[in-house]
Length: 246
Image (cartoon, rainbow, N blue to C red):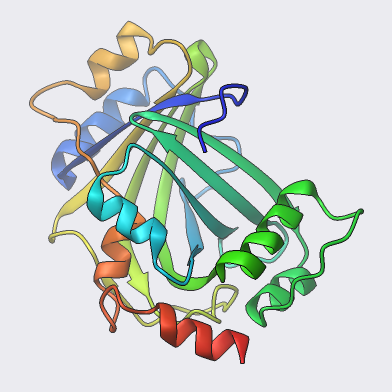
């Protein structure tokens, strides 16, 4: 699973009270601009539909703390179908790599129906995904949704994001719905997430800014917590398979 030729980045995560994260965000604004994709409101909505196989392998690997693992998801921004991204995220300890390709709404709807059409003119990643659907019964498992405030700097290719109101939804066919989903929060009230991503190095002035005070790195999986807090708990795979593949 771990590809030595892929480009891997470091990823650190911090779960902290909002008051502490807001203070870190204010300090960062003096050093880093916000991501160019952010609108005037200063953040954007992210919805991701995560997939798992018949045996819930990706979920179980999170529970077992497997060092090398991957996840598949389809992600949209601000409830729009203008850019639908199919993504495979690979991890080894604190190192991550992400492959992605754009898919059409029509392709997305075929995926929801369990239709897999491997073709030469498909993006290679999409064909790999289709093969996984056929051989491992990859299927929709949960929707993860939150609001992200992102900062980016060229030094170290650094990216720092603040993810708030992280919530879980079992409306697996409503990824593109332009409405609030039926969902529930997965963190304690007043707690949110900061992620720090960089290549070879994290600039000192940024490191000192984000690690100011008593913030501690955490092992955190949005996917695991959102599976844990769905109406079926972590046992959603058979429901999904029956719904989408019959």
